[in-house]
Image (tube, rainbow, N blue to C red):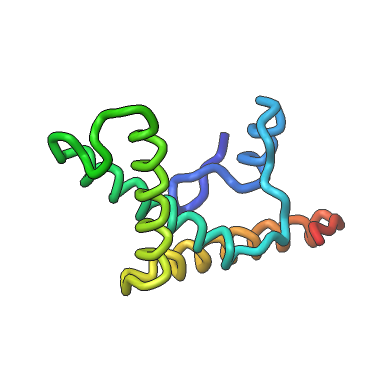
Length: 116
């Protein structure tokens, strides 16, 4: 397989590989801003979960439902962090998604196909 200047396979080859493996190919033209924000929230939630796991007993003890409440706390704090922190990971992810979509649109335009 031929690689591009970044050392990666062309997007068309990557998509063909996903289709050959029967994996879901992302739908073109999706809301990249929402996807990026969701990714940022997921990352923040995972960070909170890992930090909370260092506590000896946790906020909710070890009884029934403690893991459910712990997961709820992780998600709530993670979502809040994603909405307020200044890392702007969502902006970087959105830029990357938009760039990949533009490349895909360009490839499809050259092949006479449309993704939207």
